[in-house]
Image (cartoon, rainbow, N blue to C red; front, side, top):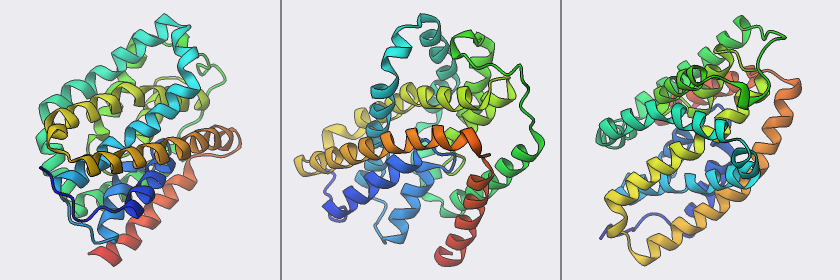
Length: 262
């Protein structure tokens, strides 16, 4: 049994809020969860690692709640999401133990990728000019565009890179407009996070106690509610703002945490 002596109800609530807010913003939810646990001085137990992965399902349910009808009405979009998911599925399956046991343990790596990702966001925002012909309808994107976005997303298996940032930038590079890139990033999170959580629970679920499942449930619910708000806010924000504020935030928080934690 993965006896939990560190994660409390307060921690479950806090992690749920952090996950729900950061999952779909290009600032790396995984990095924020891991760094939050470091700031709270929580030991990186197997349960905490699983908890940080599993509560992402709450945020994913928020996407399903908001977009299920749209996906079901477009079979082409459904299959393109499947194609986009393939690179992450293959790499995640092959590198699962390395990602969880090595990458999740390295605070230096997380802070470095958080900082570097901020620089990349700012540079991309300055250099990229969206064309008037940029694709606005997701169902009209090609399978090759979907696959390339999936390749970009697979980079985000390294904590701190940000799955949202990688897939959004990938969408913009292959010709989607800003809104459609963000929405495809939302939708692509569904199979990605379901697979990641499912694999982790398959590995460790049988060892969880009843109280640990309760904490997972609380984190799940809070992340769902906060993710609903975060998704709607981001869609409004990008209509009149660039992604540069997120890049500045990433650089600032990385430097601050480097001074505090290292």
